[in-house]
Length: 74
Ligand SMILES: [Zn+2]
Image (cartoon, rainbow, N blue to C red):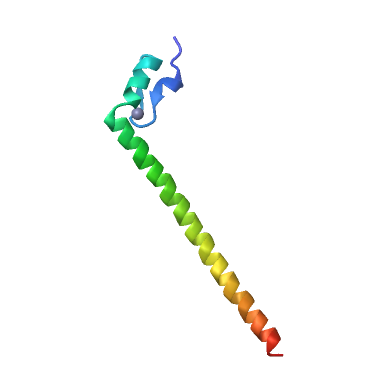
């Protein structure tokens, strides 16, 4: 018999006997907690990326302001 990977929950890597068992597990606190932590990880990764992008844009902005000033002073 082939083992369906869809019956494995990523939070604990456990294989569940049926779709119903997996669904029941997804309602448990341990799984819910894992889902929330996972979401928070995703969010902090996104925040980090945005902060890096923001830093690049700030530097670009300073550079452009300097160029404008240099042109105005000519
Ligand atoms: Zn789970």
